Amino acid sequence: MMIGMEEDHRGRLFEATIRFEHAAIRPLYLLNGGALLAALTFVGNRTDIAAGVAYSMYWWMAGLVFAAFTTAMGFASQFNFYKAHSQKVAKNQPLADHYDAYGRGFRIAAYFLGSLSLIVFLIGTWSAIGLLARVS
Image 1 (spheres, rainbow, N blue to C red):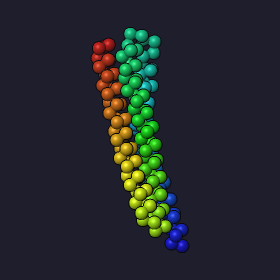
Image 2 (tube, helix red, strand yellow):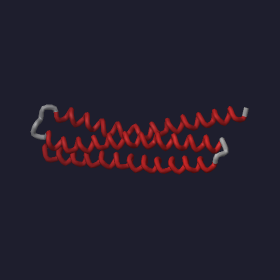
Image 3 (spheres, rainbow, N blue to C red):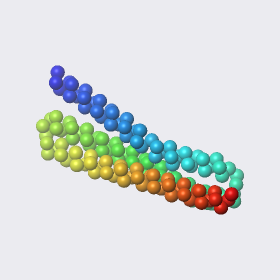
Image 4 (cartoon, one colour):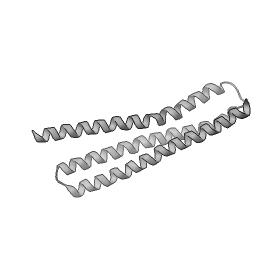
């Protein structure tokens, strides 16, 4: 009975963590992808500003790539934390510590890449605002 409750608790915790990560990572895709779509819509057939907008679009595409890597690192961290918890339940503390350390490392990488995605979004946006100021 106790093992079933432990397994149920672990499953619910894992699902809640995944939902939280999705909610935290989704804005990275929406910001960078939305900026790309807005830029494409704005440019249309205007060749006079296409080169300037392309510069911003490169930054937003990089933001999408960093967002994808953030997602991968988030998955890797949660997988390792799940494995660490499983090893703690199985009373294998050395292996649990190993998975826990990897999970923390992947989490730090996810934070770094997510921050990088936001930074390149801001660079692309700053560049597009500068372009709009010159065109207007």
